[in-house]
Length: 267
Image (tube, rainbow, N blue to C red; front, side, top):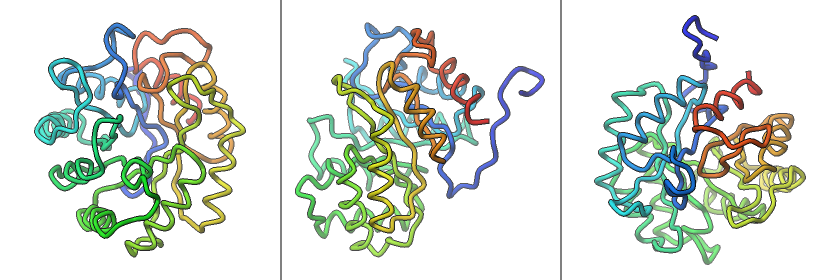
């Protein structure tokens, strides 16, 4: 800890996935779910500062429209990135192309082309629902690589690692260090079991993917998944997008309190 009580950030290289990423809002939760869900850009920036000071090296955030709906809005993302770069210049910033059932692969790609960003997350099966990468899919991966944008490939099932490996190979990026997020469970209620981490790692090995990986999990089971991932050498993403619970099962008062507790496990 530093003298002011803040947690000292572990050193990491720009090409390395930070050990701890915060996802403070997501696309679905609203103020009625928890009053500390950051909805506006000022709220996102304030949460980012607090979570960085608590130990998060990166933030994965969603922008919302005036009604609170998740939107793939390049203008809002550019505004948010500008503010975040000013306030937390040492924090890795990651926008999302998450479709949430309302955006097409074409709209996902458009956002990725329109916004210059340090990081972006792509749900591989949302971008390529056919599991057959097209020329346009290859182009967006190559474009982001040329721009030195760090892609975090979100996999909702181990089988999607096969698709990721195929896409990277077709894009000529199969030797790159791939940032991956393995989703354990589901927000709708599918339980997050720690045993479900290993099948992802088996697929990574099978496909010879050079994966710098993390997990996210849901509900009260999240704590056991975090501990398992750390024991296997993985990294973690936590925050109110996935779970409102602290490690002891109590509701967290805010994102930064949860980040601080998880950071203590990593350091």
